[in-house]
Length: 102
View 1 (cartoon, rainbow, N blue to C red):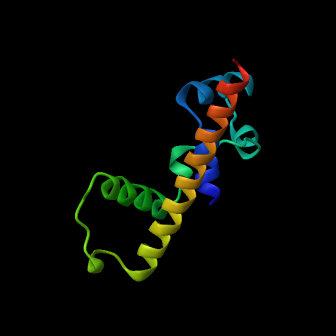
View 2 (cartoon, helix red, strand yellow):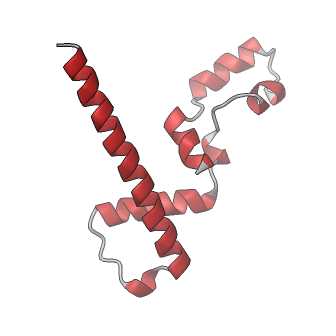
């Protein structure tokens, strides 16, 4: 869940890293340890695997029951539920903002 929250906040970009390097005289140790953004390399490999599986699933890849472990199927289901809920919430907020702006 922490990885997903970090990804939704936005990952640290090359430009942001370069800006921090300048602002911190080339020493990122303090800046990075106190930054709410994660680097892409900080995202857990299992999270990346689940996101890749979800992408394949959404594209219609024909998974069979034995392609994943029971734990992986459960985690993939949880990931789908979480992201679908967030997408629906974002759609609602967008619609509410459009309605308010009229």
